[in-house]
Length: 141
Length: 430
Image 1: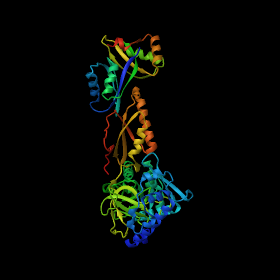
Image 2: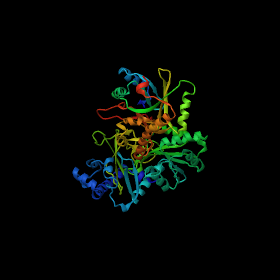
Image 3: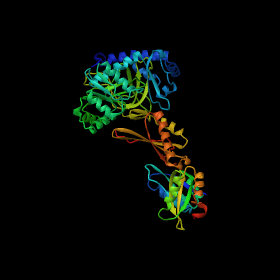
Image 4: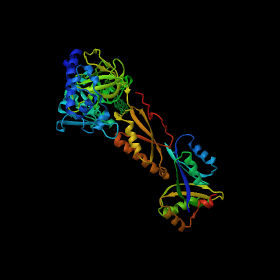
């Protein structure tokens, strides 16, 4: 029921995101989406690939500090208000979101990836509210 | 002059006095400090072997690590009952270097300071603001005692809160300032920002010490604060400030040679050298609590024995040119890379490699330490990385007494060394 994400520590210096992408491409791994914020000295690059296990191995071999985290993926309609409805549901249930990012799937639906503190509890709430929880393994590819 | 009899003594008379005192202190240390007895016995030298001043080279050296190994009071020559004051500076590793003074030591210290203050233009009429940090550091109390001894008015402002410093300087009409040269320049900047010019103050002299300064810095101090700047030198292991200081001729720092015997040795061979730059080695000729015989200061300088235009006959040492070890002086605080290494290696989330970058901006020293992140479990969120940075900072502060900027870098990106590691980059232009 979860979406696995790769997290990589990147120093804020020229060429590092490119190095990261090269490491993946050399192992024929496809990036599905990624997110990185602008910070002063360093950043955490978060990405979802078509083979995270392989990506983690390849990146570690290339000298990156890598870890993986599970996110909650929810599918929403790619239209105005699609995300707002989901967020107000979560808000009403008192769920605090640490961060989120998103991408549009091939079927035209939007996929929102949430990092929350208590993921199991959040899944239960989302199920009760009939939100569409997506598992990476099946739907993303 | 504060003590013309001593300060203008002929070199011949001085040498007689120095030899007499050297013989006495060597015997005293040998008989009262087991450390010296053991050291001299091992070297096969007896106090009686000191027959002339040159014989001092028969004695083994003392280094800062000896103080650490005998921490805190192992090198004292008197019972604790006779100790009236303790000071400390940072040591080469976790523990500070502790020094202790008898009543007579404090009197001697005040006398030495008083001479240097008068040589730097200080008088009984002066109102002096001491903007060194008070506390274990010897700088503030050393100068404080000396100024009181000459009968001046002392404002023990301590360091920090610079706007308040400026207010005190102005409102209390200070005529003299004691601080590190870099802090004095910072005070000058703050004065300017507060809308003052040097004419709003009565400052006329500035006694600067505890870190290196260049003639250019002194020129800036003269211009911005309207003071005649002079340097003074000392180290806590010997006494604190009071070892030597510039007179108004500004041609080297006069050494209080009746109390401190100075030698220059080659840092490589450790043999005495003359008329060239080398490491300064000092022997305390009169200190009771913690006699230091042939203490290696690791400071590089040169000594000039020609009489000075000011009339003093004491030898003059040049500004410190550098160090023969890796000690850094940051914001006036001694910092050894080994201390930083100790802290870094005890934090599991980061690697054992590190780099230190020292810079100076707006006359304020800044130390930045680069460390490699190795614990991938902290990548869940930024807060965990921030917490790690805060922890490294805190641990460093506990040991170094100063704040360092921490920069986390990727693993295996810092330089690796096969031979002697060069981890420090000092970008300060002094």
